[in-house]
Image 1 (cartoon, rainbow, N blue to C red):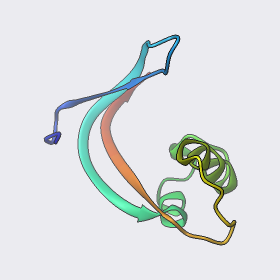
Image 2 (image 1 turned 180 degrees about the horizontal axis):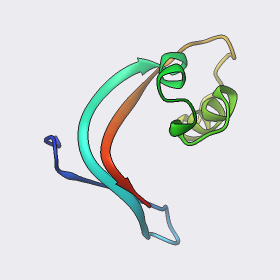
Image 3 (image 1 turned 135 degrees about the horizontal axis):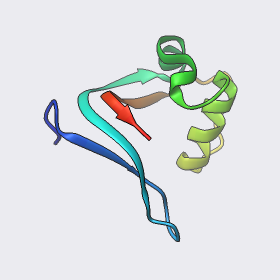
Image 4 (image 1 turned 45 degrees about the horizontal axis):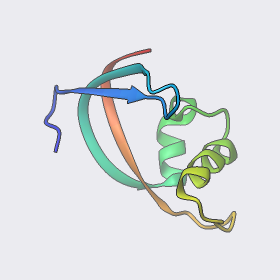
Amino acid sequence: MLRRGEPFLFKLRSPINAIVGGGLFEHYTELPVSLAWNAFGVKNGAATLMDVRARIERLRRVDTPWWEDYTIGCILLAEPFF
């Protein structure tokens, strides 16, 4: 488990396997996807709620009804870099 202030890095998947950014870990929480979108908006890495849901659902590898407000893990970082 990470402690506050420890580095958290973003790595691309194979075949590239490169570190492309990171930040300092602040906090982890779980939120409904709609609340995460309302709280962080485009800082989630997507232009719309439907876009962020599509990205998450590709990673989850499950079809989710559009109305389901499933829970996602949210990692808050300080001093992000890319």
